[in-house]
Length: 84
Image (cartoon, rainbow, N blue to C red; front, side):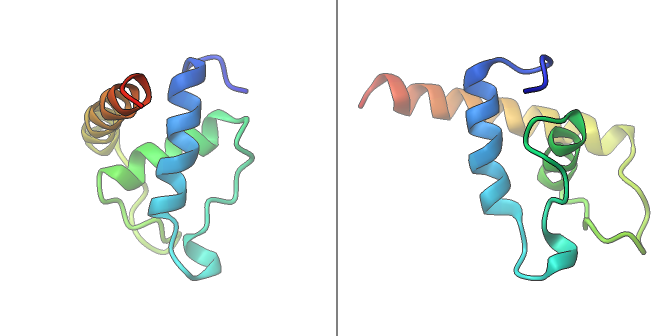
């Protein structure tokens, strides 16, 4: 797994990815869960980046917003995990 995120964050990342993936093949995350590319796509999608290759690529603002939203989800994931 990618070393940028800890184990709890990686587990949460996989769950968040399931929520964000669309029904079409174009909206599926094509990267292995063990790569930073997988995480980047999840983070960008949290910032409401479309995910389509034909649209603009995700930029720094998308990643900032996505990381803030991801951190909020991780905190919620930890709270639920600790209280169940």
